[in-house]
Structures are given as C-alpha cells and as structure tokens.
Image (cartoon, rainbow, N blue to C red; front, side, top):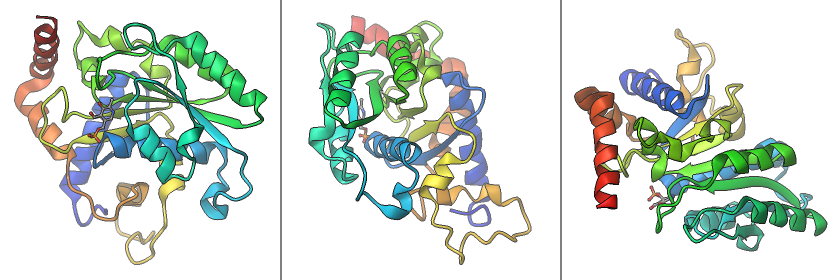
Length: 275
Ligand code: PLP
C-alpha cells in the first residue's frame, strides 16, 4: 500500500503498467493490479459512474437517475455481478445483440442507447469485450468508440482475455481502436500464461481520477509529509488495503522472455486455435 513498505514492488508495478499503457497506445495513463478481470470490470464500472456523477462518493445512490450501461450479450458474467454489487442492478445492464461471430453489432448499441434515453434513464457506460469468454470474439472497437464519443459515454474494454494480443505485431489489429477506450481490463494470467493472479485495470485518465474515486486518505498510513514523493504511495487508488505484488510475476516473466518471447506465446496460442 505504501512505498516504504514495498518500494521495489511498487516500482515494478509502475514500470509494468507503463509498458501496458504503451501497448494500448495511450500517451499516458494510470492503473492498478488487482485480484482478477472481474474485479477490474467492477473497478471500471464504479470509476465510470464516479466520472458521471462524482457526488456519489459522498452522497451515495439516493437521488440518482436510473443508471444504465451496455455490454454485448457475449460479455463476461462479471458485468452482471458488478452491476449488482455496485447497486446499479442487473436489469440496468442492457445487452446488445451480437453477429454470428459473437461481436457486438454497433447499430444495435445505438438502438439500445436510444431506448435508454427515451425511457428517461441515464446511460453512462459501454463495456466492449476484446476476446469474449466463449467465442473469443473481438468487438469492433473503432465503431463502438465513435458511438461512445458521440453519446458522451465512458468506454471500458474488457480485454481480460484478448488484451495480450496487443503484444503480437501479427494479431494486435484485433484490438484496433483500443487507444480510444477510457479504461481497459487486461489479464496477463490468461493468454500470456503468467501465474494466477495477474490482472490490471488500466485507465487513460492521468489527472488522478482513480485516486479521487477510491481514496479514503487514512491518516495513519498515507501521511502527506513523508521524506519521499508520496505519489509513490499508490495504495489509496485501490479498493484493498494490502495487496499481493502480482505485477512482479509479469515483470519477471517479461524480463526472462523479452517482448519477442511474449509475442511468440500469443502467436502460438492463436495458431493452435486455428489448427
Ligand atoms: N472477462 C473475460 C472476457 C473473461 O473471459 C474472464 C474470465 O474468463 C473474466 C473477465 C474474468 O476474469 P477473472 O477470472 O480474472 O476474474
């Protein structure tokens, strides 16, 4: 949780997050390793909601309009879990139809957003999936991102499974447009074979949104007058207090195999799937 407790692991996490952000194609960003893609999705949903209505952190849910989010019918079930856990409600996850390959149909997304607005509810988030759990489909991110920009919606990409394809020069086009997302969930413990658990939520915002949303500013731990730069006390960005140093597994693996070695893992996985 703080630099003094865990200086090396925090620097390792910072370095790994920086590299992951580069692969997404953002110039800057923020992130946090956490216990799973499901938790990353939950983090993102809460963050998108906080951006939409920051007063929720202090005031809670009462007084808010009915918030609605959109995800494809092939999305991971953690979307429903997150909606229920966060008090949004599973009925307020509007599932968007997919094509025969399991990809979200952008025109269907537009239809659902129109429907939600007509009903007087408040759309705030689209969750696209890059690598759906069952079919391995990649939603058309460019088109989905354009709809989000037009409609003023946060775009989260659940790339828990397929995010690792970003490391492959051959396959990264599957995620074309991911740089336009506001947040990305990426699990190196899936296609890259890092030890369980190794999952990051990455956020494009670099103005401290993650910290503003999640901090509790515990005075016994996050003193502001330490002898070092307290921005290294990244623990208050987390919903946890202590955390496992999951980034270290990825860092060590990356050092051992190099980017080319990781790329080979992805290419081999996709070649085997094709075979
Ligand atoms: N998102 C997708 C697309 C998944 O396929 C999975 C797991 O299979 C998850 C999220 C959940 O990841 P985790 O098991 O790390 O919670």
